[in-house]
Image (cartoon, rainbow, N blue to C red; front, side, top):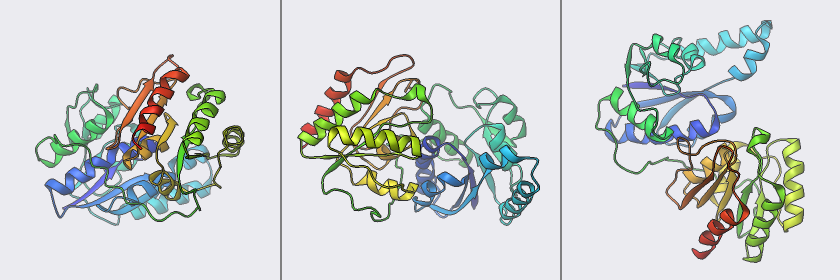
Length: 317
């Protein structure tokens, strides 16, 4: 059997889908799993041994230039690549019109959530088969349950296995370090810099160099400012795969509600997720190490809340 998973973005959502692949290969050994994903996040499914082929696309880039001839040629070329394989099943674990847009172009029956469960109701009109999955479930559990229903194996009761395998460090990280992730895609998600400095200093006082991550020029400026004030360090720009190796080597991770925080938890690191503009219930931090999600919509976590969790991390020594 050959299966195509459609989960294109964003980073945290892609990470949350990985346990479904592990479940599939446990209950249906021999299934060849391919994955359709946005190019910036392609390294994540590539780190799962069970994914055979990753099909990276650039829809986020293309949709900004839909009237450009080069865009249409790029989409035509990608569609040709997408249709090289015939799939027994095309499993849309995203449930959006943008995922359906590409899922229907693959050679195979497209399946997904039913109209009451899907994120955009119109997407369900394009599925050959659909199942109901409670919307109040965590994103990890929703993907695992939908995969089980469409592939016909018992609903999983085990802890999620993200199945990630990283490469060696491409950056000479400190021998003992903790990671801070103070940047996010929207300003509403940010946590005050002074609080990051306090957290970094606590790790530094305990013998762990604070490593402050970033992904853009503006974020780099913030990261360097925080690192300078807490005695930390800032790595150069790292690709997703290299960033994963840095996260995996950390003693602990404290980060905002962002993809790298979810990736750190998926790699088994003790992770504290700080939520300032989103409820963590359906997309909280999940992983095999001690993990915590603190804050919520309009509930910016106080410094003492986060520091209490940091102390729990440090007590593990």
